[in-house]
Image 1: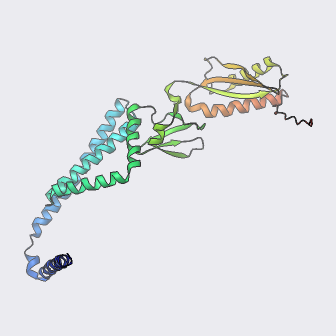
Image 2 (image 1 turned 60 degrees about the vertical axis):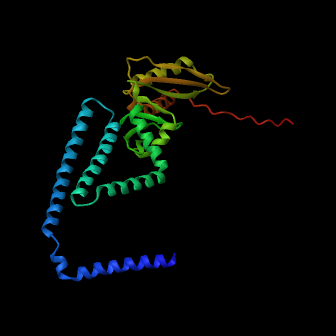
Image 3 (image 1 turned 180 degrees about the horizontal axis):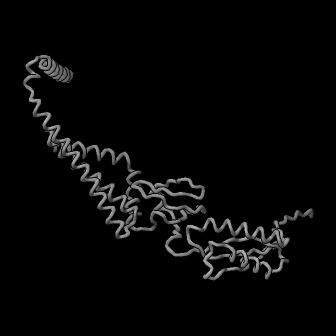
Length: 291
């Protein structure tokens, strides 16, 4: 076996030496058809430039058609990316064939690399499959306002990509979630309806005048510009504790105005409490000394 390996190595070294010796011979370079090679490269470059601009035109047409039919922007982005990858693969295959490469060997090599990469990126392939489900099922779109999982932070869908989706939070930061995480968790989409309820809970002393609290709530809701005033308000006691009454006040707003409206209601009720001398109660803890 060692003798076979030694012979093979020696044979390869001899072949390499012959190639080097041929390259040193001036007649070797003179025998090369440089004009034919340059023509092939020039033709390949022309094919690439034409193909590249054809791809841009096709992608532009796809985007216009999708937008005209009000198709999900995430699905549009996904289709354009997928088509671009397939188109460029075919284009480079044609160019490689024109330059004299064996296309069958090239395709076999690319297939082997694709299999190896697929095995190494199983988690990413799950995200890719989840991305396809997201744009197909259309549970949320770019621009929708959603809650992800049990998170109370309202997020705006920024973009839906092949492997992950981006969201903008209330601090104007971009938050990224893997697509597989989104398909495994609950998504609460507030943009499926024209209006959503903006609710605010607060505590007041047990002995407070309930009708006064309801009047103050209505006044704050009436002054709030983001509230849809032709829709009914919801003002009621939601819970009675040993030390306070828990009130709920709610009005309907557009989903994009939810966070701003919640802050405005909180500020409005705080000023109303201050004007009428109402203090927010605190829970009392009684420590017994009895043995």
